[in-house]
Length: 363
Image (cartoon, rainbow, N blue to C red; front, side, top):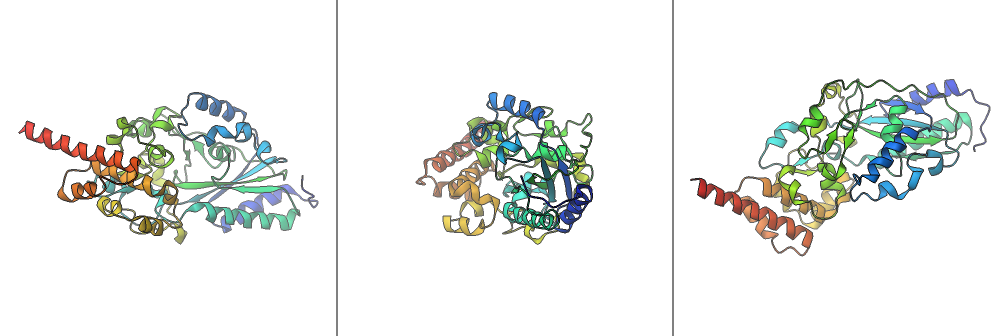
């Protein structure tokens, strides 16, 4: 435990929220560490194998749902959210309907958020320490076994919607989450009530039916999982359903009524980089490894690696209408050294051959 000064924690909690806003966080809340209900849900989800190849979800035992096991002494969690929806750019629905453009999830259009938010959480901790004296804490931004959505919901930042993402009446769902685990006995906030009602938009729009029931997500079917987390071949049954989505999927957020109230990002870091909001599939597919590394520097996209990038675009090109440009691009990668890339290129070419055959027989 920390060696704290004699501190009145109620006014400190108010100051923490004020400092958080000054640091660019749009909402700050405080929760306790009782995640027992969420632990039951997580255990059931893992037992069903719905985490797919995300072995890290089960690797840490109960540390994910018992914060004090991850950081001994933790009794409170300061939860923050930050808007990331980039200002301007092409309309997401227009890009999804395009036959030539690539769709990249809105969160990955700008600079990677992990370091940015973690630095600001550290600055928040520094401010707290000046009042409380040395205290035990650790900042997390999607970087450790943390049930961030469950914690944010307990801290009053929103409720977990039917698509299993956090929702806010004031801000929709286009925001990042971060946490500061602490041993300070701060007063806790009250969770907000749910406001999904009878809406099923997110369930009905999901291209791969990954939302198997309200509040139930099978990650193995989710396009975000298939294009980002999965490092092996994308199952055949999902390839044609992926469309032109080459990194992530926002469909469930795009149709959510609460995102009418979403706020655009205020930080320049989240502005669109390299025209990724509406770049051409063929252009992306022709990036050399050096170009990929250069154009994804400081970006969340970097984590899928060059071969994952080519794999995803090959699928999108297989779903695009046949053209000389598309076929030429695919044939140039036909003998690519990576078996993973070759497999998806050959599938894409087979799609175009099948479409050509169908067109001939139909006429």
